Length: 148
Length: 73
Picture 1 (tube, rainbow over the protein chains, first blue to last red):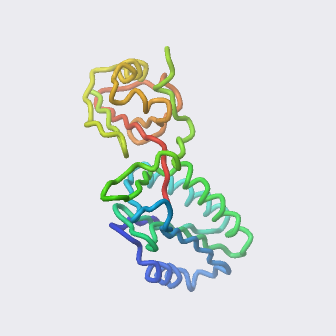
Picture 2 (spheres, rainbow over the protein chains, first blue to last red):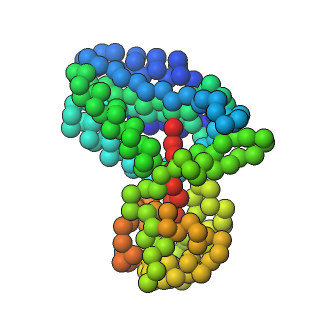
Picture 3 (tube, one colour):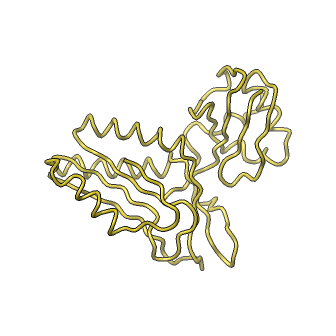
């Protein structure tokens, strides 16, 4: 399950909703990761662009991987502006036993950072500035730049 | 006609081009000062599937997306 939200995430609501959705699914572990905007470098907040068609495909591949392990992945992400101390990202893994969930949340969040088609901007002094230095080229990038 | 869209921070409107393959697109974009600096770091998708080779054939109506470096979360 993947959901995109305009602005900051309502963390207590989403975590509670996910908990209740799976409360009778016989999972022994529920491991959420919540990403919150920190104060650094004088920013007022962050802003996000999301390309949903490829994001949903990427997420579906992870859902299939989780299913093979008997687990379930859920994710919520913000679109647009998210201010300091608000949250823009939640991922969670449910699994029968803790080890699968602990390993899967780690792998999932790392791949999310490297592959999910989401672009981050710093909100600073009224401007929206692409966070180029903190961004990662998707695997396989650069084919159009190669000289022929 | 092939549509080429530029995602995220690349500030460029969608192009409509008569091209047969990605090699032709590479030549056109390398000569375009607005986007040439992005090409080394962009991933490429055809109809929302990422491709890893310029040899992928194109057909009329295909939609190409350029995805610059990402940073979700």
